[in-house]
Length: 242
Image (cartoon, rainbow, N blue to C red; front, side):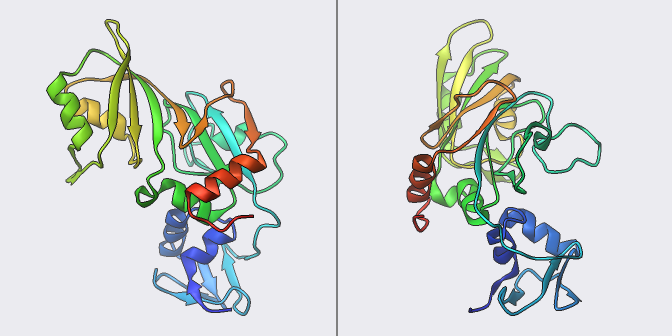
């Protein structure tokens, strides 16, 4: 088998998303044939080399698992939290496979979250390159102007880098209106920061759709994706079928 970048091998094995795998390497938690690796460009052969993460020998997942979860407010979208807050993993009662969240929802954000042990699937869902839209219902403490809506759609500077084109529309008019926002990227606190750019605060934020997949679960509930949904995602992500 040809050599591949180490972070790709870890992602394929279901250890973590490719981004998180890069962090594990930089933290010195990955060894190849007994040598600690800290260079992201390092390649290895998973069939020939002994690759360990946190001292445990790497094995690929027995089968890929894909789960949809309705994340409630007050949970961290990580596998482990050093502050000992509740994580989304605490909600997955009865799931034996080691899965991890695909992307993130902020602590006070709610809604649709995918979890899997398929690293390439996770990488493509979160990458803006594959243009998988994520749709949110957002309650805000007031309206933004039509001109600000146009700026929101075109992209605004956020931490020195312009946001990707987005969609926004009012879905419920009130003193504190609800907007529907559609993004193809997902930077940390992005929607909250975009509204804050226009002097507005987000009061509630719920992800209601990822690509074609609608939120159909009560808060805290989860379900496996159907084989049809998985194949539909794989087609959307340009992954090999099956």
